[in-house]
Amino acid sequence: MAETRTSGQATEKVQGRRKEVVGEVVANRMQKTIVVKVTRKRAHPFYGRVVARNKKFYAHDEKNEAHVGDIVRIEETRPLSKLKRWKLKDIVRKTALVPEAVTEVPAK
Image (cartoon, rainbow, N blue to C red):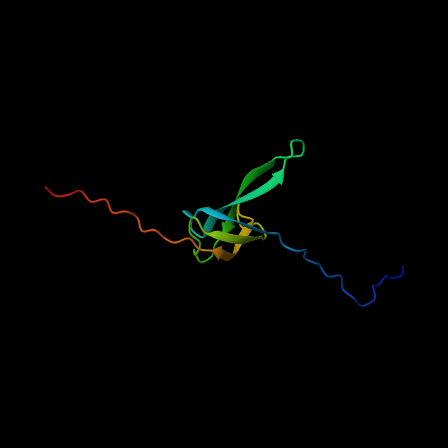
């Protein structure tokens, strides 16, 4: 049998572009994980009215730097857990942190 060879060039696996979305952090109670709500607005196919649809994504936040209310950019990645397929790319806008109100009982 004759051997078939390609012309010296190895076939390389080309990685496609990773999707990026921008959304608001709605939860950061888990370690190294944030929940990001992404809102998309589309015209209704029949009525023409603009309708907003929300979707939540679990994203990996290695340094725990995102807080609730921040606007973040996340990018698609390999599956990191059962639900996490996104990772934090950068924080677009930080929210001003408001200290929690101290509720002390007045002494009588």
